[in-house]
Length: 280
Ligand SMILES: *[C@@H]1O[C@H](CO)[C@@H](O)[C@H](O)[C@H]1NC(C)=O
Ligand SMILES: *[C@@H]1O[C@H](CO)[C@@H](O)[C@H](O)[C@H]1NC(C)=O
Ligand SMILES: *[C@@H]1O[C@H](CO)[C@@H](O)[C@H](O)[C@H]1NC(C)=O
Ligand SMILES: *[C@@H]1O[C@H](CO)[C@@H](O)[C@H](O)[C@H]1NC(C)=O
Image 1 (cartoon, rainbow, N blue to C red):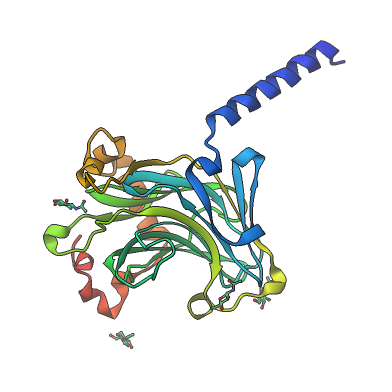
Image 2: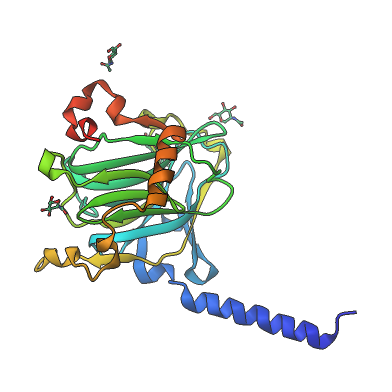
């Protein structure tokens, strides 16, 4: 028989641990605010979790308070678990003006989950003062609809690395010496759930509302200062000292390219327009 005291000890350990977690975790509103979607964004768990919802009336999205010049950006995300054809769930960096004309030429680094009929595709893209079209797509080795996983963008002057959990799935090097475009502008973070009929097809709204869950709102980034943009290249920021993948990461990256990458823009006929496709 479990004694009353033992239960008390158990309860107090439980609450102690919980308190530790809550004091260490960054709250959503410390780093982000709502961009659109009215009541379709729901902040729960004392700001530690956010649900972005989409139905036939609207999608929703949030945006970082700050602009950055480099960083190691990540978020934990669980994408909608319904049959979600046409639903796009994102985490990305962009230089686009927040409520301005999108234009075409800008910088952007995208994670975009494209919902399908009982499946999904992870699309990634990079814009570098241009119209982008640098898609690479993946079938991850885990199911992103059933659990939270960490999606991470490392961005410094040497390379951009996309990670899914600890696995580098895409590397885009700064090869400006070879005429390759590379992002140069300050960027902020956005996360959205939206739809685009032309790109990924019609949404079956009867399957909704579609819900994406986000956690871990800490940000490791260099706040961009107009007066001193070079500051974001400073080696005092740990992410600026990461100039290459580790040997272990190289191995994982090779495996992803061989087994999980389902499409690359370099396979397109117009790939000669992208000098990086000719480099190794
Ligand atoms: C879905 O996309 C269409 C255009 O493709 C747009 O007109 C519509 O407003 C979008 N619906 C929502 C809920 O965002
Ligand atoms: C890209 O690398 C070059 C050196 O090869 C460097 O001069 C330049 O600042 C880098 N660009 C960015 C945007 O980090
Ligand atoms: C998913 O939704 C589509 C319509 O968007 C429907 O045709 C299909 O049968 C659904 N699949 C499942 C597994 O429910
Ligand atoms: C790409 O090239 C192949 C043959 O080289 C051709 O069959 C195909 O139509 C081309 N696609 C486009 C979009 O031009």
